[in-house]
Image (cartoon, rainbow, N blue to C red; front, side):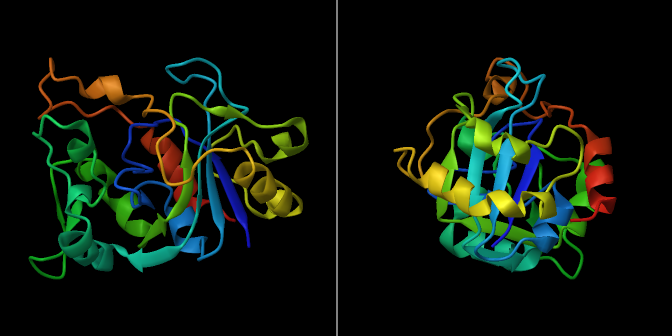
Length: 224
């Protein structure tokens, strides 16, 4: 069991997507999506420049990987089992707009990018991750992040990329801590910090928060 930790700069409900009692990481963080296996934990830590202030020593979400599949298989899975994960970019419902099943494999070998939180400039990085990580054992705090206790602050990763090998001494301690906080798993205990970026007063057809694409480029080349 490994523990992957990284700074979640853009908590917009898409990466991760914690809705419908299934937390998924299907876009961004390509190295983690390739490397993490069933049983591993993935942790998104707060940013020093988040919309709610400096929360770099806080957990925004934590998911234990309970399933892993290719992006193609995920598209097939969502069509049958979780259609709400397929984005409906012009919907009035926030959760529909930020669906993370953004690649349509039904039209041939090459996937077609659906209208979504990402545009064509993100495609190389997204597809480079190959896999989707899925969790039916997760904690999502969003705009109500939870502070790490002092013994676990070593897992904080403030830079681009992520940590995993250096986290090995803290895996059991972290799992014990988060499972005993008293939060019910598989529920939202807060809302995405960037949810207001998708307010209905704006033209949702063109409203895409600008992600730090350099972060994903660095992550794509980083080692575990």
